[in-house]
Length: 383
Image 1: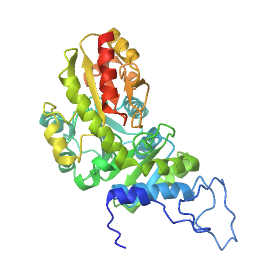
Image 2: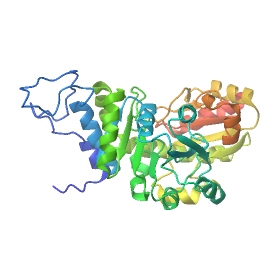
Image 3: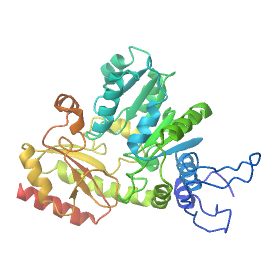
Image 4: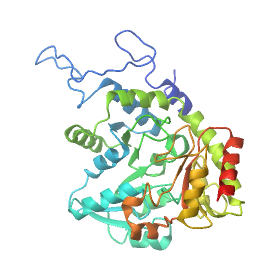
């Protein structure tokens, strides 16, 4: 059979028929912390689960295959994936990162830069002037988050690659997943994920992953740090994530259909100030998104006419959208970034990034669209 399989086939078939012991169709869960060694001169592939584990390896192989990379370091969370990635840097290295990135990521980068782990510059990747300023120096690493969280800004991955041909270009692909965006084809060297989100897709596992395109040295360094830091993902979490991965394409496409309808609904609503969704022609990054993505995704944000009090009443009135952290599950969620996901940035950084008190972020699920729009409408009436 040809190895050039389509993505839908890859995610469904990941790990199928690989059991070496009993030929189980589904790959088994190996919970053992340690493995018996036959002799000092007869070492097997597995000795200790922090270093390597068969279940974690199956997930890593599946994600690397799906993104088109040579290997994957599976981690205990998305933040662990980012932490691992940062260990490729030396104190004198310059890191460029988005000024409007996920709040906890922003906090981590700023805190580590203050401790002199690396040099840091938060930059605007969304305009020519911003790119000119960003690349006035030569960075060792560039981190992109596109679409950005939560304003859904679109960075041109290929354009950034052209500006910094010698830098390590790392792309957070959490919002779109490998189904809708392939950063390696656009010039990225590393792709990382919070697998907690769309890849697992059922809001019952916390995990992360760092996938390397084609540099064995970088992959070996990441695996060494993952083992030494103990940022590895647990076998049970890997098993559950691999299970969730099999429905990734159908979940993402159904949720995206719902998001497109909701974005149009919100854009035409008199109580909505602005809708941030790359699928709308009015979005500043619409043309770039059309060019570098295979879809516009299931994430969107919008500002209500009013202040935080109105945003709170709206969110609390919803019944189908749960007020909660995280995203990417089968269920629809609503989030208030200023007081939840981006509170760690601080007020000044939030204001610069456009994370206002009346901004709300939706993670659109796979429920029936009529129920979702009806829920939004009744919440507007409550406001």
